[in-house]
Length: 70
Image (tube, rainbow, N blue to C red; front, side):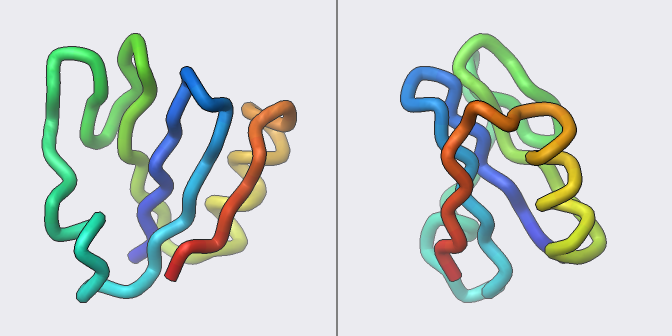
């Protein structure tokens, strides 16, 4: 599983693929960021593999920087 952290204020999409990543372990729903959906400031979206995540980025958020974190 791949998680993409979409951050609307900074216009960045960060891919996380390593389950031991501290950012993945700390992800949680907040009033402005969702898990599984996007809210006011963005959120965490899951994908079956990195290619699908990159396709989503290219199709839906091309103006956002894409970062491979782990």
